[in-house]
Amino acid sequence: MDENGNVKLSAVDKDGNPVELSPEDQAILDNISKGMNDALNWLEEEGFIKTFSVFLPGIFHLKVLGFISKYSSMFYHITGGVTPDNAYELAYNATIGVAISYQMVQYSEKSFNDFDSEIGFWTSYWSRKSGLVYNKNSNRSGMHFYGDAKHLGLLDVANLSKAIIYRESTFDPDAHRGDSNGFKGLMGVAYEGGPMLIMIL
Image (tube, one colour):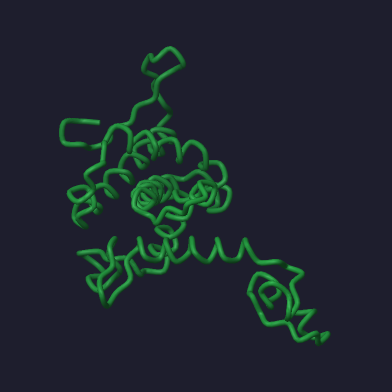
């Protein structure tokens, strides 16, 4: 990271010595740096870095890089392979996802907070893919990081997703009307006992 907070990644061997990459691999590394930096710039424009007093650049960056390392193989598999564009998307959305996770609602049961970065990542990814996110050049009416009284922000969508995941993971899939919650299955549909409903669930 340079004096302006920009990420500049380079390849090193296990002893920390610089390694020269192939042009293809260098393009991947450069796009990871660009994705992180573009996301950090967007977060700064959105007021995240200024309003978040616990923001520690070194720790934050390490958490983003840890996320990228953990999920890169899966993400590249889902998105069609290791390409500079996919590397950019991985890094950009990992950075936004970690930022979202820092400010998500925390549940009292710690295990319910274990996937905040993942929820933040996919919230960012699908919001970008669907064209819903604010961009000063192309989508000035899009969704911001923080919501307001009339609009949801990425943080709001992530918290809603987390609440839905929590609620769905606490359903009793075998519940019947009259049982503890009177609903059946992940969608929480009231169970009347008809065979068609059983097939749908």
